[in-house]
Structure formats: structure tokens, C-alpha cells
Length: 157
Image (tube, rainbow, N blue to C red; front, side):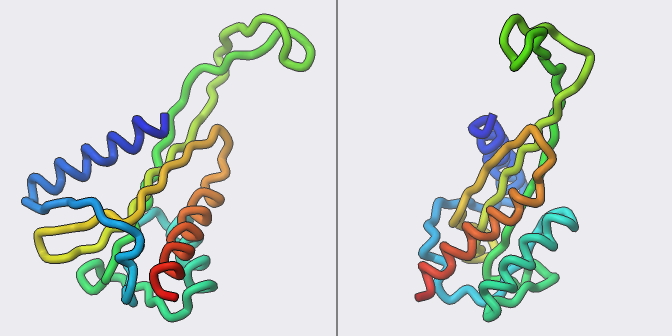
């Protein structure tokens, strides 16, 4: 599921980039050196979680409201899929599983840190993907923020 989600995000970024004639290149986390302003694109609760973690651990990094003014962009996308649950007929999950009309939900996250190098070029510095059956979405936003913070600290000792 994670590989398919990351692949679909990459395809979507490529399609958007092709329309806008923007070139997306592979980069590395070390390119976060000297980044001082970031823009976070995410739904409000996720954006708040990411911003709080970054503000707590990287007070020197300013979070801006305009992507044009940012040195790097953090893009956090959430999708939800549902499927019919399989329930076990026996104690402790042993025995045959039977289909049910109950639905299970899976939350998938794909996130990227990209750095514009010109008006027509972006470099992908960090990729993150995760999925969960339970609703611990906030935890995924915080994990992404921690990965960004750790990479930033490594690039800016």
C-alpha cells in the first residue's frame, strides 16, 4: 500500500510539474543547509502538529504563509480508504474469517520536503509515507516533522 501511494504521489507531482513545465529532481536531506523559512502545506490539524514540533525544536526556522517566500516546502497529504472487514468466528482470532458488512478504514500519508532551486526546478529532499488502520493521523504528522527536524539538524550542525 505504501509503495503504491508513494508511486501515485510521484506520478501526480510529475503531471503537475509537466503542466507547469517544472522539473523535479532528486535531492538529499543535506540540502537543508541554510534553510531559514519553510512553508507547510497540510490540512489544519496536521499543519498545527507539524508546526508545533518544528517550532519546539527549531526556533530559528520561520514558518511562512506564502510558499513563494519559503526556502523549502513541506507537503503533507492524507488519504483514506475503506474496505470490508474480515471478522474471526473463534476466540482470540483463531478459526475461519468471514466477510462482514463492517468497514475498516486505512489512513495513508505521503509527505515530501521539496526545495525550489529556481522558478522551474524543484528538488525532493525527503520522502515520507505511512499508513494506519486506526485514526492516529496526528502521530503521523508528528513523525514526519521529527524526520524533518532530525534531517535539518544534521544538515545544519
